[in-house]
Image 1: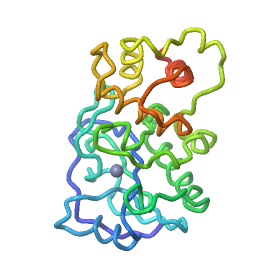
Image 2 (image 1 turned 135 degrees about the horizontal axis):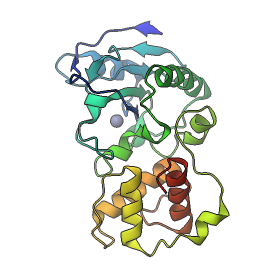
Image 3 (image 1 turned 90 degrees about the vertical axis):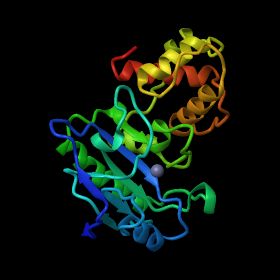
Length: 238
Ligand SMILES: [Zn+2]
């Protein structure tokens, strides 16, 4: 880990625990461009860590400081994500500049750093290891459907849906109100409107980017529904 301090941070509010780990891609054409932006005073953005494609980890902001990476968004009852989160940026051109798989060396470095973060911050439960797109489905796509969340879960970082055919019995993707309530119960920012509206399509798509990347439709099918129930069950919420 090399220290490259960014000036873009502030105090965390007193008394609050860090309880979210938020993953991003940089969405820029190069690692150096991303590093420059994340450390430029005028940019107003930062993250605690930046990890390049070769697995080099750069520490930009101390974990006890509030970095500026999340923007508007929410998860469960958390409405100011920067207050309570640690942000990691992964170098990747993103959907705008030629989205690529995340290299093995980068994933290995991330798993190492994330494991240490979870050990230091036990309030970050597996259901609170999140994509930027999870907390801001209408605005964000990162780190996107090529990010290997299953590999992270296999290494004790976050959840991945388990195969339980029993969940399928309780699942009806046509029941929009129940789908919305279940997504909200897991933490997604969604209101139970009872209709398949834009917010629902956006949240379902965010869910699929994270937990069902082979089915990026914005419409829940039986497997979407089953995976959501599996996650709720793992989190002790269903
Ligand atoms: Zn992001």
